[in-house]
Length: 236
Image 1: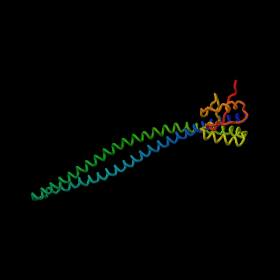
Image 2: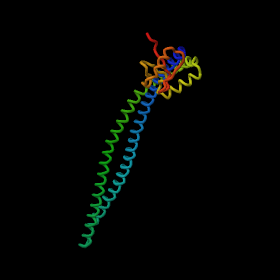
Image 3: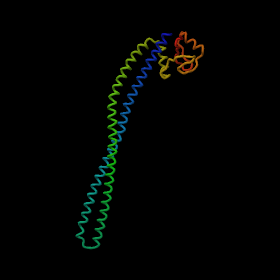
Image 4: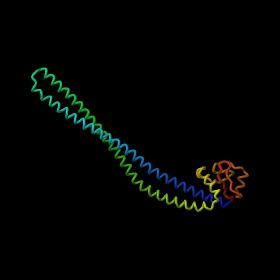
């Protein structure tokens, strides 16, 4: 039983190292995913601002065309003044000119408003583009580093798994299944030391008779509270 327990303890140590490597590897992958998510998020903002900018520029271009038409209309109406022969016609033309100039002023104000919006959007777009470039630059530098770390982690993982397979083949199948189930259910701690009459896996007191029997190492025993496999260090 002493030999089986040593194998199980060795297996647990290897599995804990494997779990640690896998956790580290997952952290690297999550960091890469975070960069991708940040890049995608900012790129989405850049695309949205760019589309909004294009719409504003189209609207401004249309207003500029309307402005040209109104200005041409004013010139055309004013050109009729020398031909007017009656006071009534003169007043009517002046009124038409006044209305045309008011319409022209409204369009000019709209054009100015669009230009101000474009200016604001241009600043926002530059800010987001700079942010995107900074994230991309940081991501590129870190990505190379993370790819190397992932390769190293993968090599370590494969080496540990080879060692694990070598140890696991010497463990009886039923005991191996029990251990693996406990390892998953108990957060990577299937085998726990018993000391001072307690299981250090769950910190619960063991029956005195059971604790004392652990020193005989006659058979494998489990904690009655958490079901972990128990072992004790030989007394000095």
